[in-house]
Amino acid sequence: SDLGADPAMELVDRLKERVTIEGAQEADSVREMLREELIAMVDPSMDRRLTATRKDDKPAVMMVVGVNGVGKTTTVGKLARVLVAEKRNVILGAADTFRAAAAEQLTTWGERVGVETVRSDQEGADPASVAFSAVEEGIKQESDVVLVDTAGRLHSKANLMEELGKVKRVTEKQAEVGEVLLVIDATTGQNGLAQAKVFTEAVNVTGIVLTKMDGTAKGGIVVAIQRQLGVPVKLIGLGEGADDLAPFEAEAFVDALLAS
Ligand code: GDP
Image (cartoon, rainbow, N blue to C red; front, side, top):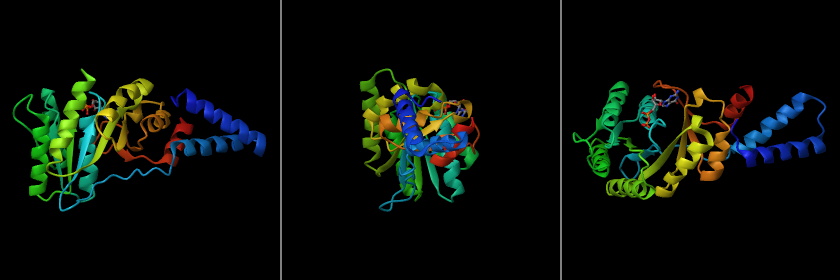
């Protein structure tokens, strides 16, 4: 399941050790040991809560980052839906000004879930200034959360770091960015993970959203992601629809992995 070579080896070693010490009369007991060891690897003790409440009389600000096509805009839409269902007032910021269709796509999501989208009419506008305006609007409207979508082009690491760093810095002139969510496409496996690493060097990532979990049996990537990036998986994407976003739960996740 794309657990990765090192964790897979560790897992086999742990199981061998336990079978030697505890014995295993039945296949069921080995399966239960496997389940327990996998849950331990996914680490149920990690804090996976989202910072989504107002602080210092200002909205909670979340930035969503990641490579193009991984599902950032879709995730912002779904997340807005979850927050709206929790009776929170939400504003979206279309700071992906690089791709012409991105602001349009985000606005459509906003309309779908009933929240306003702050965007620039100009293609190629300064993403930092759009993010700034979105938070400014959130402060004015006393919103609970401002969700900022960003561009994912990776044409050079230095350029990406500069742009994302600037978006964050400029946004923080208005309010603290409490959450930076890095979106990773589960179907791209270890490859996608290598690309995603660049983002953790550009901004201080606070959580991972693992998308397209409906299209893969490679869920083991969760373990590799958390180990290599040192950040918990907080949410998983399970489809293209508005309701296809779920909090990540270690035990339910391992059970699904073992059933597949
Ligand atoms: P962005 O470029 O990172 O903003 O990516 P988009 O949000 O535009 O998503 C790219 C494609 O992935 C779209 O066709 C989405 O519908 C699809 N997508 C996003 N999340 C999921 C998911 O959890 N499961 C599936 N099956 N598709 C998804």
